[in-house]
Image (cartoon, rainbow, N blue to C red; front, top):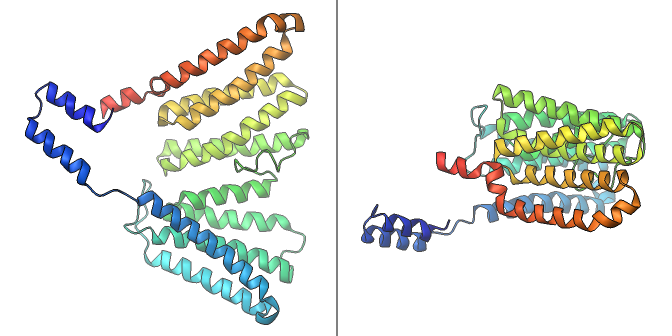
Length: 327
């Protein structure tokens, strides 16, 4: 419902006089336009370009600068970022905390990126970790988790979860979960599902304890997406398909339940998309070909109708209308 429609309904019910409605319309038209998210995007882009540009600059002048100076400059910049963030810190709270200025958030992100850059540079130049590559993944995770909770930064939390997944041996980000994981190996599926299960269980426990409940979305999104893909891969091409099917059913239920709890369209869509893939695979593998010829088109027509119904009714499924009325 638009702002004008709300005013018109209030006028029709004589809840406000026409003069007040005109004043509200004029205020709505003349009020400043918010560019908050546009500026945040530009700042995040600036942090990414700055870290990447420094890397290219150092690479081009590596012979002139020297390895020790490069490592010292990276460490100095990283320490400066963390020192500024600590100086501008807010008191810790389990609820959402936001700075009046977005600068500390971006400096924290830049400091974490420089931390990763420093670790990679020391490994490349001095072979600091040797063949213990697991240390290169677990150390950032152990550093980023406390930073994410102390300074309430979901971006750093995502980096911590990604580093922890790398230590386990899986790629958990949505862009790499399909391209950098070998789901053809049974042991890898167990590893991926185990990682996702631990993360989801830990996030659920923290949410129940009221500790940074706004972090739950990030936990569930990364771990849930990985768990769905691993369960589908296990059901498609491995033994014990019933086990993976039960895991898929459980994941769909949990995703749908959390979507209603958080009024999240993303998790509702995740449950429906992965559930539809599983249902279609079940339909085309269980029934014989002569049945598929007759009912295949009917199946797709029915599912298309369900998708149309979903687009019209998703707010009711998520409980958004009841939530808006209660607010």
